[in-house]
Image 1: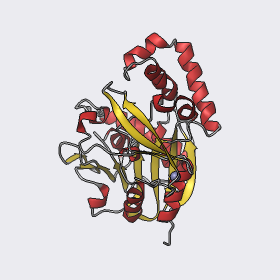
Image 2: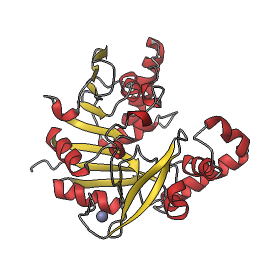
Image 3: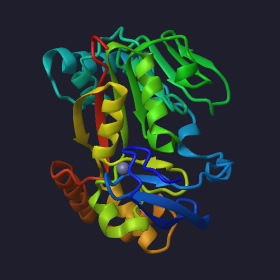
Length: 306
Ligand SMILES: [Zn+2]
């Protein structure tokens, strides 16, 4: 590999990182672009399955809600979208309000895992929901208006008003191909929402390969904001907005790795008091405002005429 997958620069520096989430170790060589700052795994293992254990979080069971709970969630979503009432608004409510998505909009979630997020949207009142994940066991119609497809979005006949990728993009190999296929699958004026870690992170700059969201070798690409924007504009997208949405995870996860531990959530309570975790949450909010948090939500719009 000689070029940055984002900006095309040949000015790359290399470093090695270990698998730390499960404690498998190994040595994985990454390139850091000296022009745009994006990161990419140099040699992708032919078989990545040993790094995705059967209990990987995406594949755990779907939690469904009762009719009454769904009704309450729908009312809550409507009162937020239409009246601006912010009462226990789920995170997805803020994304969808920004995109102005109608309840009958066709929405895809790429890398949907067990479909939990789409189920929450269904409970919130959305009725044309499609999950795509080639790694799920089988195709399944969870409820009317919510289907999970065992395939890639580019293999679908459908086109969408909104395509979402929540922490899926960084597991893909070719950012140009991904954005191009999403562009082709969006209706004019539609939005691609990508949430992923970014190399603009202060934690990456200070802790380097101990940064929890480097996540070797599962994360094949980690863009900088600048790098992703180059690919997006080249594809034909207009940038609607970039919003940093990192959490305290960047600090406590990295701290576990600094202490030589795996990503064992049960150890967090031993390392940090409740007050310390609250302080880390505040620190994450501050980092987000300063543009140095470790993950971002990109809103990319396909122009009405392209
Ligand atoms: Zn670059």
